[in-house]
Figure 1 (cartoon, rainbow, N blue to C red):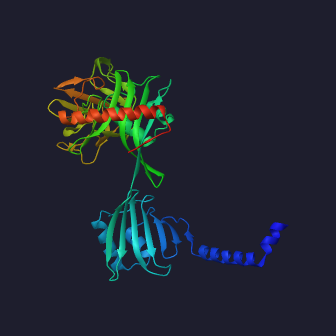
Figure 2: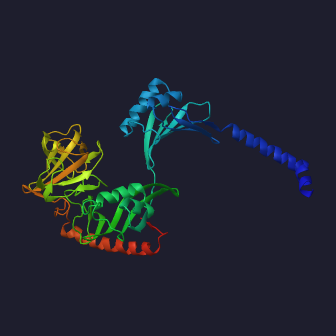
Figure 3: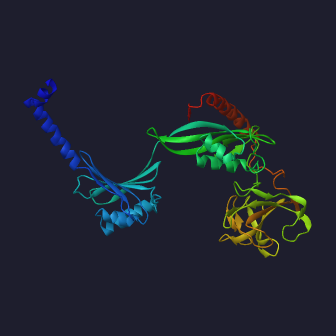
Length: 420
C-alpha cells in the first residue's frame, strides 16, 4: 500500500508523465523497415543531432539504385560512384556489405555516406557546402589474438571430424588441410591415436569476434614422423611456412590435388586393368571424385599437353620445372582458358573430374613424372619452394622458440589466448 501511495504522489506523477513524453518522442524517431526481397534491409536510427539509415546490401541491389532510393540526384549519384571507384569500391556484395546514409534530420538530404566493404575498412564520403563529395578511408583497429586448439584422431575418424570436435573452425581446418597435404596423404596416413594442433589468429573488434586470421603453426603426428609448420615473415616482407629447422615446408607439388579424396587405386608396377582385363603398370594414383569435382593444379607450371586419348580420356599435362611434370586424366571437361601454353598457379582449377577414356567410374587419375620417369605421388621426395637464407634462418629460429613457448603455455591453459 505504501508503494502505491508513493506512485500517486502528484510530484511523482509529474515526473512519470514527463519521462513517458520523452520516451514516446524517442520511440517516434526510431523506424525499422523489414527485409524486402529482392532488396536491402534498412534501419533508420535518429540520434540527438543526426538521422542514420543503415542498409545491408541484398541480392539484386546496385549502388546507383540504393543511392537513388535515398533521394540523391542523378548528378550526385554519378559523382559518388566516381569517388568510390577511385577509392577501391567498385561493386557491392549481397548480405555482406553495408552502407550508412546520414542526414541532419529525417527530412534533410543525405550529407554523409559510409560504405563498409569489409569488417576492417570504412569509406566515408561527406558533402561540403559547395555540394562536392569528399572521401576518407578509415581502417578499423583489430584486436588480434593467438588461439591454440588440439585434438586426437579416434577410431573411425577422419581428420575433418576430429578437427571439428577439437573446436577448430571449418575455414581454419581447410587451411590446415591444404598445408599438411604437401606432406601427407589423408587417406592413408591418418590413424587412431594421432595427435594434432593448430595455433591461429582470431580477429576481434570492440570485443566482438569478427573473423579468423592466419595460421601461425601446425603440428601433426604423421606416420612418417611429426610434421610441424610455422608461418614466418622474412625481412623482405614475404611470408612462407617452414619446418622446425627453417627449411621450406611448402613443396613444389601436392601429393593429393583434391582435398579429402579417397584413394581407390595406388601406384603399382603390376595391376590388373579394370577395363582391359590384363596386367600392366598403374603409373599414378586414382582418387574417387564425383563428376564435376574441380581439379586444381598440384603446382605452378605451364600446360604442355591438353587433349583426349582413348586411355586417359580428357587429360592435362603440366611441366613444373626441369625435373617434374604432372598429368590429370579422365576429366569430364577442361577449365575455361586452360590451353597448351597456359601458365597456371598452384591450386588453380584446370578441369573437372569425370569418367572419360578407359574408366569404370568418375575419378581423377593423377601422375607425377620426374626426369621422364613415373614416380609414386604419395612417397616421392618433393623439393621445397622457399628455403631461408642464413640471416632469415637465424631470425626464424629465434621466432620459432618464442612461438613454441607460447604454444606450451596455451596447451596447459586452453581457455587463454595471446594478444598479438
